[in-house]
Length: 482
Image (cartoon, rainbow, N blue to C red):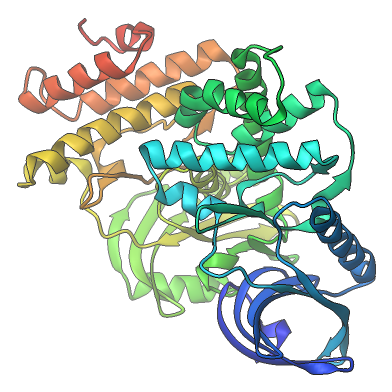
């Protein structure tokens, strides 16, 4: 196995010679930017380490910046993994800049800890992160690439990592509040609303400041930042090679492959063969959906068909529906909502014009919402499914997202009562508040059409909508009787 062969995080087996040092044994890939940067777990001189490898013409500059940031945090008394060694290595005759950091025992990154926690445990975790941010600011340091993955949690303590984004800077109060808002922007929308005031109080207490800014302003900044961040990610970042996606473009096709999927680039014949041997789920004029195996993985392939030459002409100039599904799947994941893992997007091109397109997602085995509620489930699970369905809709309302086709077959329910969203090619995130409100009302109307009015399930949903939505305007527009 070589560095060039690493395509997605997971187990590896590599030995890397270091200049004048013991050999570095690597056993897991944590993150990569293909051909330029790798973060791997391993052992060196009998010690558990995390290795950062940098390649390319900017390698020396990036490695130096990362090491300097780590040293600044250590000098300021900020808890951060020790930099054990900095130097040069080589892999496949490619020179590398290498940084070795001590591994923190029993550590989990804060993004993962946040996802796994709930209620008071999640609030306490966020309080610890805000205190860590305040400590950086008090020490005259600013993290210019602020996100949850740049913190580790171990035994109730926060460790700051990624020295690359650390800059020496004394922040004004407004700049400090903006940094706090940026951290809050990484949270799910309901947590932003629930805990911004509390987290602002934690920050003020850690700095010894008196309140000089309303929490509503911090929340507004956080929401604006989140919207811009998501829009940049789903319209630009996932349509080029980055740490999450491998992008490949030729005169005949373009394709994007998720790094996390474990797939590699494919071609249209391979996709067609996989569809031919799979189980058909839908055979329509505009799209064909098949459950099959692709590169030994269970997937669902959705092929967007071209019906005739006029249809081909109309689609040639616009982003494909496969690209819309790819974009919206990543949008939902970015907001912390469940949807099958987007794995691959493929578009056929003719002189730059779009033709047939494919969207590949991980197979999701769960029943749709109609089937789920017809089956017997413990009352607690059924109640949770109702609550999760309504809370999902409420989050979409807050984020100005509309699904566009909210029939029961496009919503699945896990055995824990969580909602998984599929069929995303009509989903939109609106810029206009009124347009979003009208689209949301249409979504709610279509959702409730799945059940007979005045049935027990229909009434349970309506009651939950009335409880969850403080403003009943969208419910009234959807024709829900109040």
